[in-house]
Length: 139
Image 1: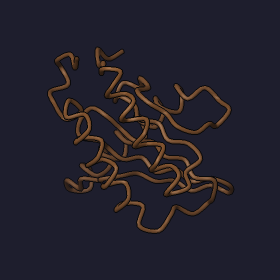
Image 2: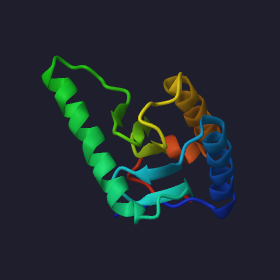
Image 3: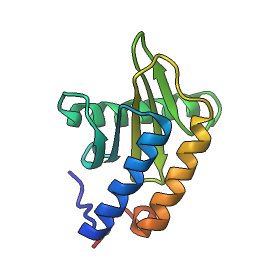
């Protein structure tokens, strides 16, 4: 488990930003997690325990990065999957965190990369500790 913590005021900012984003992109569920699978914030609901989703999403993202390195150093910025009823978009928030976004459609929203980038910028502005050294405590 991570030693990653944030102040309650920062957690409230993150929750507000993620809720507004969820409404704008019509996501069913969004989770901000540490790369070890620990959940930092979530909005929406899937009706399942989100911890395995966070852990598996982290593993999937890291696996895709390894595939990119095997292909000559490709630095994949995000990973997405589509199914019959849902789609998922996984993207980093710097080195330590990932945003996992579930959509209630087999197709991702248009310009999801742009919307995601804006959310990441707002999250980092709201809580600069998100981009600090992950070996130190964030307090």
